Structures are given as structure tokens and as C-alpha cells.
Image 1 (cartoon, rainbow, N blue to C red):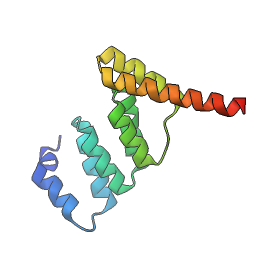
Image 2 (cartoon, rainbow, N blue to C red):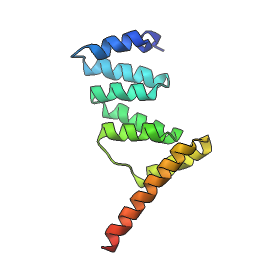
Image 3 (cartoon, rainbow, N blue to C red):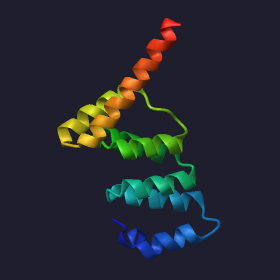
Length: 122
């Protein structure tokens, strides 16, 4: 594992530069992802326009039941929440004891279903 890449000084040096090669940003994101630093990895993937890396963050967020990270990845990908993802996220959050994430995912799913019902009834 690339501990030197994960030091805050190294990350700051990379992010403070005006122009950084996307490959460097993506590799830093992968190193952070490998070390479980998902929110930081998402930032690097965003700057690199690395959709594959962001998709990995999204998948991990769902599997971890992490609603905050899920929304962050969706925002960076420019996508909206999907019902099946929200349902799975709520289930995983419940198992992990992440009550806030579970409740937020269920509320978002309920809102999405209500919106769909409103459109189908129109």
C-alpha cells in the first residue's frame, strides 16, 4: 500500500497544483480506495473525471450502507438515485446498524415511489 501517497502533505501537494495529470489523480484515488478512505478517493476520482473509480465508490457505498457516500458518488457522476440501489442500501445500512443512513435511504425511496405514483396517476 502506498502510505506516502496517503500522507496529508502528499495529497495536499497534489491537490494544490493547478494542473495534475488525470492518471496521477486516478492512481491516488485508487490508493485511497484500497486503504478504505472512500470520501477522499471520490474527490480524486472526481478531479480525474474517472467514472470507473466513482462507480466503484458508489458500489462500495451501497454495500456499506453509507447514504452520505452514496449521494456524494451520485453527485459526482451526475446521476440520480435508483430505487433498487436505495432499497439495497437501506437493507445494508440496517444490518450494519447505520440507522441514519437506513432512514435517509428509505425516505428517498419513499419519495421516489410517491413521485412515480403521482406521474402514473396523471
